[in-house]
Image 1: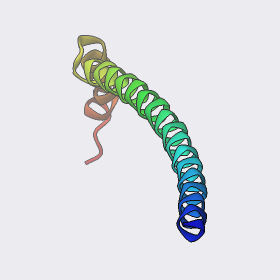
Image 2: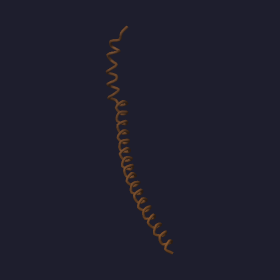
Image 3: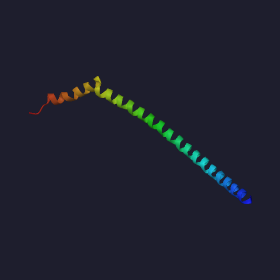
Image 4: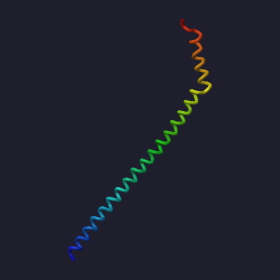
Length: 83
């Protein structure tokens, strides 16, 4: 009977230790997950900024102002063509 009580106490002690280890592992996982989520949101914000910049540059390259500047830049070459 004494041996069973000792074994039971030992098992309870081991279970308590495992419980604490599992609790620490879950807390660590949650901490890393919250960091990962924060990084994901920063990356998404940067992607949005890059898309906006891409649209702005694309609009400039295809816009009237750019085409006008490009035409003005070609004009001297046409006027002073080397033969």
